[in-house]
Every structure is written in structure tokens, then in C-alpha cells.
Image (cartoon, rainbow, N blue to C red; front, side, top):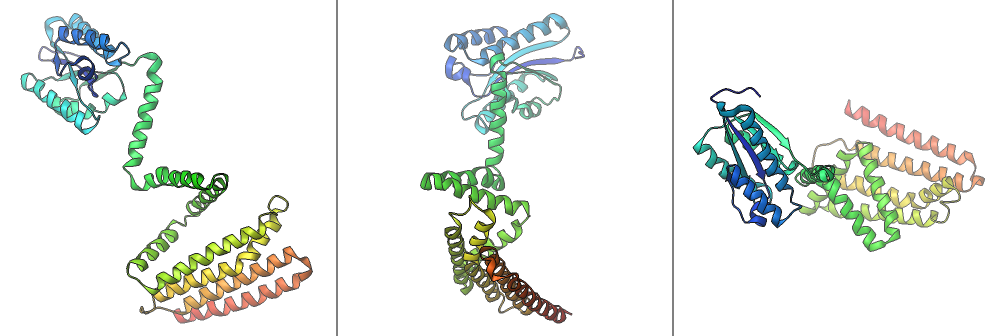
Length: 355
């Protein structure tokens, strides 16, 4: 670093969590070479494993080296400031106050910042603001065997703090795991399969970008409950039929899954399709009740009901053929023809009405 006679250099050591105060009973700021050495010795006697001891001695070494290299051409000071607990706003406020005391006596235009870890480096913006300089040279001191462990600790700490402060991320990283743990605690091994199902549904929704539809239904369900609309009870019935359909399908296919996956899927759909059909119909009725007073094209609801009927009929016919081939392929083709014709007629009417 280039120097002039007007330079005032500060060798600054930071103990953000105030180990110096807690273990050696010394208050900051600690100004001067001899006081810093005394502080380091007392702290080392109180706790030989304390990393702040290394930081203070490193700061003294940097101070001595600067004095030796620059002589009397510049003014060099050494100061250790201490924070408090909990680490964060409270500790940083204490450090700000101590830096204010320093700047009242002398203005520093260069700072050698000595840190014993990433936690102390979080106050870099405070140092720049309070000392009014961007000429800051960082010297990080970490005991070698703890270097990677400490670095990893603060990376994880920063990540968790960022997630906790973000509502959307906290739902994913805290909310979903919490639900999984609760399910496992209640249902044991069976809960593990349930957890996989929940994760699978979540990945399906996110993977196919179904979030707006899911959130839209949740919002509609919540609003209908708050306003005590008739649609709320229809939604409850729809969800009930959905759950019953899944249970019915699972009960029918449970013993077949390992033997024949296609047959198991067919049994599941065949047993649950009517309940799922009624669930979808009730969902449509709920939306219709919501929009009953609005001027809307009711043919789109008819199209929805016919489409749900067609899909359900096709699934039932196809799964019947897979389960029992004696039903014949003709029944499936007949179902496709009638369902396709009904869907085409209704969609054409809807399109004509819109035009």
C-alpha cells in the first residue's frame, strides 16, 4: 500500500461475540500495543483454545511490521473492539459505538482489518461507514485445523438465516420437512410411503408449473370459507370424494403392484374413477356457484362437465379391457367414438357462443 505523511493507519481487530469481555473481563475498545498484548495473555490464560487470542497477536504482529517498514512517516495505531451477545444487531451496535469513540480522536484513511472468522467479517460495511474509508485490507486468522469447519459453519448459518427470513423459501426448506417428520412420527413406516407421495405431488406441481392452479384453488377455498358461501360446502364434498377415490383405488390395487404395474394402475383407476368423477363434477359446481351472479358464458361449464364425463368413461372402458380382455376392444372404440362426438359438439357450441 502506498503511503504519505498524512496517512493514519488503524490496525483493527474485532471480537464480535465479546469473548474478551466474557472470559477475560476486559471492555473494549482496547487501544495500544501493550494493552492488546495484556488482553491476549489474559484471554489465553482464561481459555487457551480461544481463536481471538491468535487474532490479537496477529494484529500486534501487523502493527509491529508496519511500524518497522514505515517508521515515523505515518501514524499507526492498534485497536481491538468488542461486540456482545446475541451476535447481530445488538453486537454490531456496541461495535459502532466504540468506532465512534475512535473517530472523535483521529481520522483514519487506511485500515488493516484482522478477523478470526467469517462472523467478524460481517461488520465490514459498518467499518467502512464509521471510519469513512474504503481502503480496508483484510487479514483473516483462523487456526488451521478449524479453518474449513468454521467456514462451512458460517456458510450454513448464512443460508439458514436467509431461508428463515424468506416466507416462500421457509415453506420449502422448513415447512415441508416439518410435515414429513410429523407424518413419520405418527404413522411410522407407512408414513414413509406417505411422505414419498407428498414429495411426489409437490414435484409434479412444480415440474409442470401447476402452482397457479393449486394456489388459485386454495385461495378460492379460503375465500369461500371466510364469506360462508355455498360453494365452500361443495368444495368440501369434492375433496371428500377425492380422498375416498384414492383410498378405494389403493385398496383395490395394493396387492398387485409388485406383480404387474399395468394391472395395478388399471385396478386403481377402475375402482376410483367414479368417485374421482364426482369429485371433479362437484369442483365444477362450486366454481359455477361462485360465478352464478356474474355475466358469463355458461357453455364453458357444460363443456367442462362433458369433458370430465368423457375422460372418466374412456378411463373406465380402457381399464375394464386391461383387467378383463373378454370385454373386447370394441367397447373401448365405441366409448372413444361417443365421448369424442359429445366433446366436439359441446366445444363447437361454446366457440359459436363466443363468436
